[in-house]
Image (tube, rainbow, N blue to C red; front, side, top):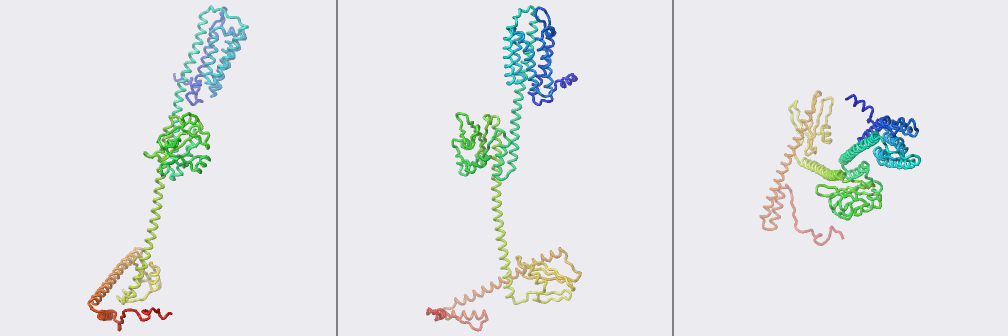
Length: 574
């Protein structure tokens, strides 16, 4: 059985045909060709004609009028089989139709169409054309049938009407032959119709799947965009490039007022012109976009419909169908996707959910882009605030350093004690010193660690800092073999920082003590002044207190103004 199937698949090859319908058409040509060859061969040698009882083969030998159809059939039927096997299905179908017309059709003409069997030959011509070549074949078969019919009735003038047959078995065989042929064609037609419907459904499903796949691809592409305008422009470009039915696409977004849908993205030169004109439509207006943004429902408006809401656009006169889909962000409409087509059957109902899904993804991308732009704006604002804060902090630090430096300068100037010390650990000698070496000066001026080497050894100077301001420096003298590791230098710098904090604390304590002493002295002098009961006593007490406090040799106090000032003069000026 497997061997027979293998042989059959090699003889009746269908490998060159990809779809179910094309395969069934090829199988139909194979079947009809073989069926006609087998039945015709049997009929030629078995059926008897007339009172003579001779068969068709003998009749064709005696009359050339019958030999031509037979030769035509045996030439064209195998040619049809071979063409179909070579992948030329249309040519094979056409040759098979012509083989029937040039054999059975001419045979029917030669008999003058006097009986039922010859009429069936003509009728089968029409049915066979429609079965093999569709509408074109039906038309061609009908034309051939009309021509053969005219030729048959014309031929009656030279053909005598046949006498009633006396061989009912022969007549019945001929009748059953055509009946079997007709039934076979009807069976093939039904099978072909069923497969056509199935393939049509499969093709529709494949088209919808392809549309859904394109929608997914477009969604992925636009989801990768961040900038809002880039999202919008990329979306409409992707739509017009991937959907053959759509020649113009545009997106409307509702403005902050919620009353106007403004065009923000549109394709081609027309789109650029509409954007330049700042095209917009009012929400709930009698327009496709107005209704979609107002009712939150998709609309498909066909230009040739009597009750259409579509309004002809002077810039898009070729539009036959306009479909608009709401851009929904939760329960809120943010805009509309407007698609236009030149094809009257565009946007079938089965495809509308896919387009709405695309619109939903566009709305999500718009929200994401807006959130991204908002976050970018806030990041930029925060960056500006941070920069301003850093600048203010640097200014505060600079002022602190300046104030710290000034405060220490005044403190050191007012100090009566020596503010420097030198320790010689080799001799255990400690002495006060105000001398500044070159390395000490370099360290305080550069505000960083300075290291120098000479014949006597190695010098390391470290600045003493308070709030970043160098207020002094300390110096280490090492022997010629002495080295400070990075860890040692880090330790020295940390100690210098702690030293700076310590002396700053001591300075602040001394200043607070001095301030407290001055305040106490002021309070004491104020108490004495308030205890005096007249002006002379107050002036006398004030002079004695100031002399005691300031160690002055003489104190002079005057009330009122000099005579020149009292007389309105100003330093002798006229």
